[in-house]
Image (cartoon, rainbow, N blue to C red; front, side):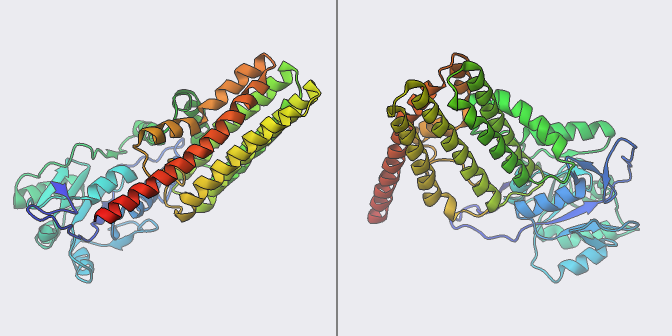
Length: 425
């Protein structure tokens, strides 16, 4: 198997139609009093299995999604077909493309579906992961559908695999990084939940975010997923928690500062839940990403402002206000610059903010990305325990302006490099 956008001996990309997806209803029933059901399927973290397949398939770039519905209604978002001959008739009206056949109880995830969509199996007629996924090459589809319809039809994965093996021989292998899961038992539901939650951990998470924040935020998201709570509501809650923590830094006493620092930390943890919930339920939006981005920066500005005012009051001096101004200007300048260069041109189909630069593999960019993660918040409770939260303001008053000027430097360097490449070509 090879990438769908290339052909052997041809350097030009080949444009192939997106594969259509066929779901086969499962004979096994997972209905139980302790399992929440939607559309006749078990609900896993707020979505039924078929609904998750529909949304993940659209996100991955699949074509039409059909449901082989002999004796039950097709789930929303799918097209019902009574048998394989009806599927053949429906496909006559569209461009010839490959078919992906899977049980309706498969746990669909965007990652492996994208890999499947981007892979072609020619010259093989078909490939498979036994009992989980079958991929039919476009050239083999008419013959395969005739074989599957004959003698009463094949209506489960085992029967489909057996008939295809008789007609085309053994299946080719599917790339090892494509590893879907089928939910066949009640125990599989718990395993599927853990699998989906693990998939929410980002490669860009800092050390503390990965090993501490996520352990808490994922459990919160797990309990929120079956509810009607929207990701943007979690964002607003996170902002409110952060703003409530800011006034405690007006005090020079360690206890009040520590309380403010813990609320600041709670803001950071809850801030991870909105994105987790959005990715779990395919509710990412541009509005949500922008609200999350600017909400974080508003909280930081409030924290820096209160730290500066508190320090000025305790020292009976005005110079701490200058430190606060430097931290706030550096923060807003950096946020505005990143938004203008990158966020304003993105849609809401994926993470809005992933890096401070368009060249994230660069060494300086990697260092700045690490500095922009949430791990720095853990310094605040440590300083606050000693009544020295203002030390964090001192660091921010130096670090935030430097960060802004490094952003400008990166942008200028990228522009010069882009101009050099354009001139050379």
